[in-house]
Image (cartoon, rainbow, N blue to C red; front, side, top):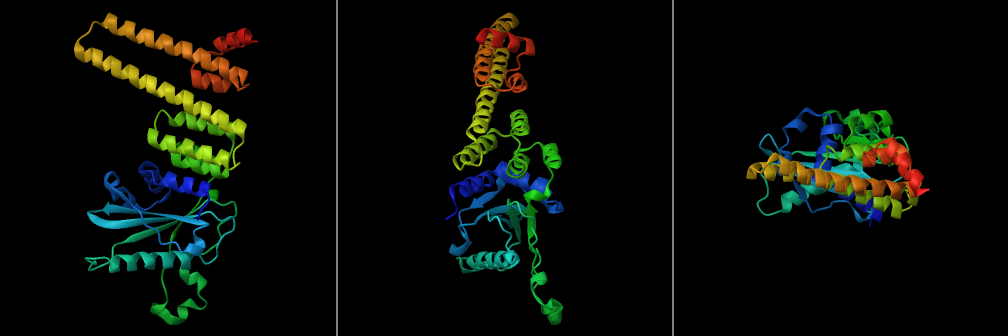
Length: 311
């Protein structure tokens, strides 16, 4: 079986938001825009042989593409070394999937399109051929009867840190963490996600960070910083939403503006006090002032004053 880290990594792509980001960001094919992402379905099946389950994981999504059923297969390759005959294994997977469809009740008259993706998160450069003909000696010898097959490769280490940081999505943050890990940059990146990303996807991302820490791929100090951001920014996001909802409710009820302002001011003052308490805690932990400012939104002068009081 795949180890716990690999399973947590697979869980990330079981989230429909992250799956959509993977396709829209890294699969540059015109038909991707035609997928009905609101009605995709993840199948609870695997066609990876027992021999390879230790180093591979898979996901199968059923999608609607131009009113036709199609499938997206993601094979996640966790081995540190590149497997040269990967095209053969992917083709075997595809044929196993098709045979399963044929053997079901109400077998199809024709087989549906299947798009195979190999997602590689290793450090070595991916050198394995993506076309099976490149693995067959004198492939042209048989002319049109030579085997034709190609999979779509996404090798995380082929994307620069700069290109990933420009994307500013959960999927790009995952790739950056795997290949270009830098805790200071990562903290800034994850803080920006709270303002624009789906919270269920963010929650899975931080659950994955926890697995990285438990598997000793992230230090305890770094994980504490990430966890602090998750806690504080998450609380701030919920508070902002609560204030917005409170304002909307009061406006719907036709309450006086003064009463609205009074309630909001009370909540904001409570938030300010919590921010100061968070800042004190972060100062005691020795966290960087820039990070504290980003999380709490307090001024540098306020934080310097709190530091003097704490000392």
